[in-house]
Amino acid sequence: MSRYGATPGGSVTIPELADMKRDRRRIVMVTAYDYPGGKLADRAGVDIVLVGDSAAMTVLGRDSTVPATMDEMVVLASAAARGAERPLVVADMPFGSFQVSDEEAVRNAVRFAKEAGADAVKLEGAGPSVSRVLALVGAGIPVMGHLGLTPQSASMLGGFRAQGRTAAKALQLYDDALALEAAGCFSLVLEAVPAPVAARITAALSIPTIGIGSGADCDGQVLVYHDLLGLYEGRSARFVKRYAEIGAEIQDGLERFAEDVRSGAFPEDSHTYSIPEDELAEFESGLKGLSRR
Ligand code: KIV
Image 1: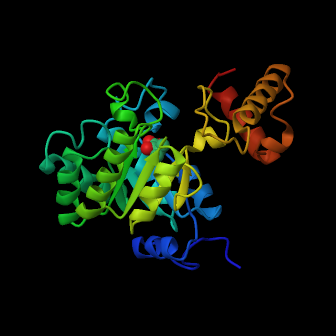
Image 2: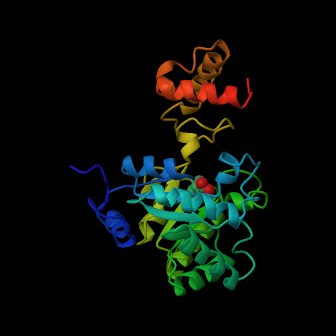
């Protein structure tokens, strides 16, 4: 049996994600930011690879996602897309790339499609973002929405904290989710939303929800690559589960390499190339002829 949730033998498509919701097959999404990450996610049978603007923190070492630029994201998305052949590749619209106008949002999303080979884009928020979704979908670019804790506006939300924890805020999230679906989003990320609220939103939508810190009733789940694999040293949110400690493995490997270089244990003969004896002798006499030492 295929390990893939969708389309053995082909790429994951947007209609198949809708089928997965209908058939109650859970959707697996993970972030990736480079060729090996995309390839490994593909081989693991992941359905959607998100080139998240979390890259600003996990890959580029910044304090938040806000400084991510289009140029940076296009490079990362194109590398991940080359590795991720089967999964649907979604590129995250960074802060500033869609806030100003519908036109600018379309121009930047077109870069993801043409320069990076992304299949779709993701953008945060509702309100003005609804008009962006309409414009992007009108231009033929599939859009994933993102509600709840939207890191690009974390300071407006009072920090990195759960959202929709009062009845009024939960109702607002519910309305926003319906508005994004009506505008044409093919899927919706729900981040740090109380599980019962995410469950009601998921039931109300015909498009799949992908949860992160939003409970088991979402149609799929996403985690950040560096968080789930133990590559990122920052404090993890409570919704992160670690499946590996790759950072510690890498550090151990690097320390052993440094030790071997310093002690002369690396490289060994098997790591070097030979030259035929006669060529070496000619080389040596050539050096003498040039009076080199
Ligand atoms: O940027 C990102 O990685 C994200 C996910 C956490 C959903 O938006």
